[in-house]
Amino acid sequence: MRHSLTPSPYRVPGSDGSGKQGYPPAPEPLPVPVMDNHTHLDFPGDDVRVEIAAALDAAEAVGVRGAVQIGCDLESSRFTVQAVDLDARLLGAVAIHPNDAPRYAQCGELEAALAEIEELAAHPRIRAIGETGLDFFRTEGEGLAHQRYSFRRHIDIAKRLDLTLQIHDRDAHSDVVQVLREEGTPERVVFHCFSGDEDLARICNSEGWFMSFAGTLTFKNAANLRAALAVADPELVLVETDSPFLTPHPHRGRPNASYMVPYTVRAMAKLTDSDLAGLCTAISRNTVRAYGSWD
Image (cartoon, rainbow, N blue to C red; front, top):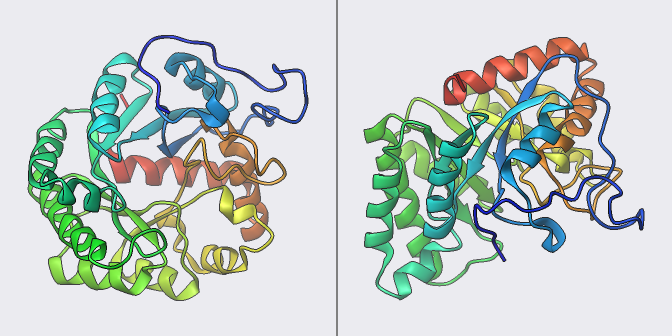
């Protein structure tokens, strides 16, 4: 269930009193601010309704000075356009998610939906088309043809409007790369919640595509992500939450939010043996290169 833009309580760490549910404890602030380049403020975690300003206040308090709010269907893309007007700490992205493209197509509404996405993308604080791409985990059969068509159309929109393309890639690495190479890409491409391995990271390095790492990097079974980060060009590395999903260790299973970014950044610094402040500076610089200024 998604919420409206009406202000409502933001349940902060431990506010439910149980110590097991609700949002995890706030991490130690980062020494240099970064941005969360993928969040869903209209998807409440654990049925908790989140007020935009409160969510961004909590993030800013720990060194996360802005976020990119992501649309994945018409409803959430409309929300995104409204949200970026409410708080200058937000930029936005709009799209039809690959798993939603078949739904629109089956209703005969995909073309109209894509046309509206292009209209919404004209807003000056909408800086990306996404999340779009391919998902072979949840969609199969004829739905994959609709995914591919929608993906190609999103690439075209991003190129014509000179917007960043934010990729959703689940169990479809080689196919995503193939489509990108066939269509030609906009100047800036981001693999959201990077889920590939060292080989995909090397392809991204060679193509100049950004790799955005989420809390999944901290999961015990994510050796492929740690190997990818080890070879990723530092100038192409971003960080995200994909909140309210993918909460980093040690709070996996609880709702995620932008204020949780420092857990992932510290894990990245440890894994790459990087100076934390230097890594934060690089991530912030990369994020502005990917989306433009928040100012």
